[in-house]
Each structure stands twice: as C-alpha cells, then as structure tokens.
Image (cartoon, rainbow, N blue to C red):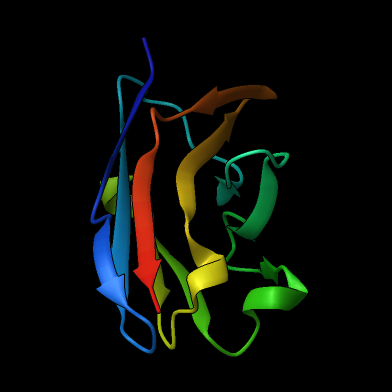
Length: 115
C-alpha cells in the first residue's frame, strides 16, 4: 500500500517562505513523476510543479521564479520550496506520485498566506 505523507504547511505572511515535503512509502518500485498540486476554495485542483525521475521539472506560470521543486530518490521524497508567497497561493497542497502508471495522492497540507 503506497502512502504519501505531506508536511510543512502552515500560516505565513505575504513575502514569506515555506518548504513542503512529501515522503512516499510502501513501494519498492521506482517512482516516476512526483509533483505538487493545489486546490483553493471553489477552484479546481491545479498543477503547481512536477519533477521526473531524471530531474526534469515543470512549473505553473504563476509560480515560476518563486517555487522550486526537488526530489531525493534515495528517500522517495519530493520537496517544494516556496518563496515570495502571495495571498493567492493560499490553498490545500497535494502531493502526487506515479508508480508504474498508477497515480497516488497525499491527504493534502494547508498553506495560508496572509496579506
């Protein structure tokens, strides 16, 4: 049973920083793509950033230059460093992992940015 455990969310003032982490457990298989999505109240879940097993990255335009995704393959962990946070970044952030074409989601962690 694959599980994704997120951590690092919280409340921060605009302009501040947070670092999210997501650790995958329960699988001996290599994880293909890992990523972060977010969902604000009343909005659809959207991609924030993703990273392939080889390190290639993809970012939403709204976070380019402010967020950085990275991963530790040995620890099956993906990180999201979020700088220069804005109130519009407020959302529940979800971790996603793809293992042998199956998609797994974490439970989500709340990020709230106050103005």
